[in-house]
Image (cartoon, rainbow, N blue to C red; front, top):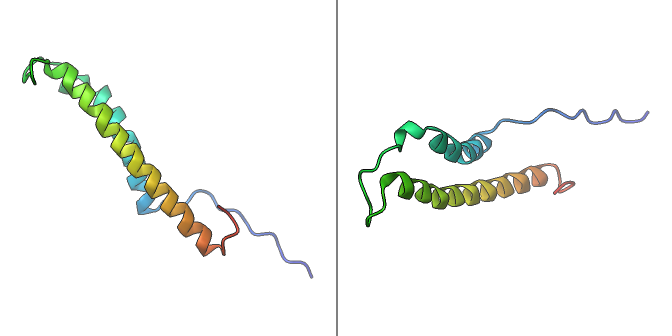
Length: 88
């Protein structure tokens, strides 16, 4: 008899995927919480806090996105090796 097709499950929530989600959501939360940075002090080299805080988050967001991407690639390679390398 023929084999039954493999049933596709929904997305699997793993600790690595939770970390990926947190890395991607953190910049949004930080920038949408305007009350936390809507002030002028402390100034950094003459730049008010409001501006340098946002520019700092550009760098932090880049780093978090890179981390999330690397974790995602590692997770996908691990899943592909568990399935016998059928998918990439």
